[in-house]
Amino acid sequence: MGLTAEPVLPDATEIERILRAILDALEEGYRRISELARAVRAEYDRGRAALEQVKTEALRCIEQVDELAAKSRVARYDL
Image 1: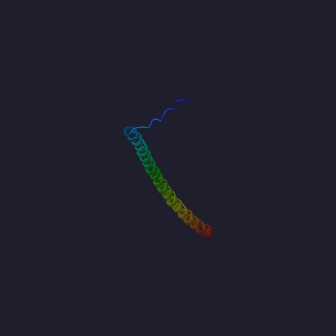
Image 2: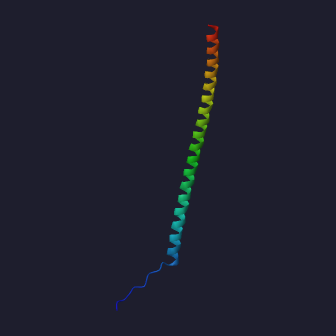
Image 3: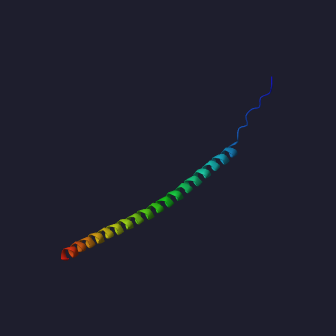
């Protein structure tokens, strides 16, 4: 019969070190995700503001086209 080695269990200090490393990794991951979320939100806000600006400009252009079309109709009528 061969000798079987007993598994070596980590002591409390080693377990605490492992748990601390896990917690540190989780905290770092949370921090990175939070930074990413803030960056994504800022980019979303910039995109939304740009979209609103484009909408406003498009409406202004539509109003100008309508105004010029009306003037064109009047000018044609006068001719």
